[in-house]
Image (cartoon, rainbow, N blue to C red; front, side, top):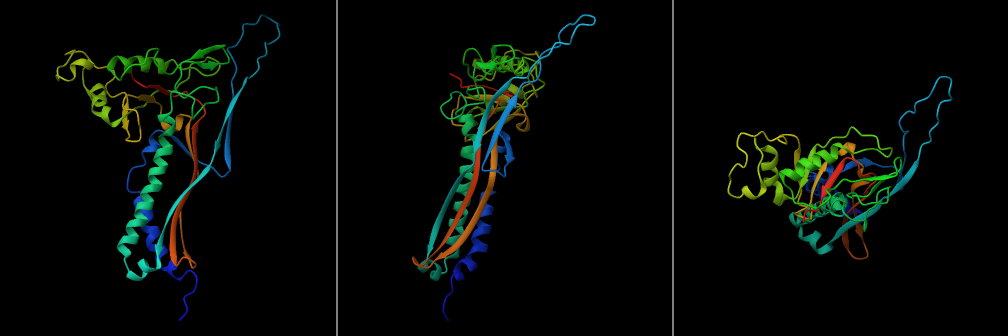
Amino acid sequence: MPHVRGEYAELLAPVLNLRTFEAYRRKPELYRAVNNVMSSSRAYEDDYAITGFGPLSETGELQPTPMDEIIKLGGTRYFHKKYALGFVISEEMREAGNMDLMSTLAGALGVSASYTTELFGHDVWNNAFDTTRYIGRDGEALISDAHPVPGTGGTATNRPAVDTDLSQAALEAAWSDFYMQVDDRGIPIDLMPATLFVHPTKYQFARQLLESSSPLITDQLASGTNANPGVVNTMQGWLNIHTSPYLTDPDAWFMMAPPSDIDVRFYWRKTMDTKTWDDEDADGTIHKVKQRHSNGFSDWRGVYGCPGY
């Protein structure tokens, strides 16, 4: 009986696809905690913005109403790129009936797809302090002390004046600076921090800072002594703690509003998809995955950070 095109692929595809997707979803999607994840139906997404108006002006009786104009701000374009990987199952491997190995390979491909997503989902944070890879619509890095405020002619900052490692004092100062964030007209915004994002090596320390009932001084933590017995820790319970092995700098730390309120974005143009087909010329069956997405940021507000020192 002659073998027709697609015979092996049709037999293997359901098993390989299932294993690939199982492996893809086996770990929590950490990137979703630090990105505003959206979907897109276009080849790319453009994000432009304008300011609102300034404060009202005093006018006298029967005087004309003063007029104001909005200010057009810059924009950010998100290009969706395709990422793919696959493997070939030889005719000899098929004939040996080694389905366990084939299933393992399919699962490994799912892990690779998930890993790729996490790498790009954390890339903005790993390059948050310079403009080498990502630039916001104001021409600055995500974390900068020189964000222009067009409505006032001044600048704003979302990092400490002097880089500092994570500490109680650094958190308190960061919370105050976060609270003072303004829009492009210089008007205070109602955007509050919800999460402290740290490297796994700083997770336990972050818990001590945010979950202890009284404040702790950094250099006394090693001895386990309470620096201020009887004094209330004003930061206790104020922030959730998020950690990720994909954050590359162990000294960097970030304070951020909920993901849906920030402009660090991850666009899914097409989530992971699988395809299995026969290559008659090479006598093999090919299994591959592909996905399309983009990432970046438009606006810095709702985020505060420091690279440490």
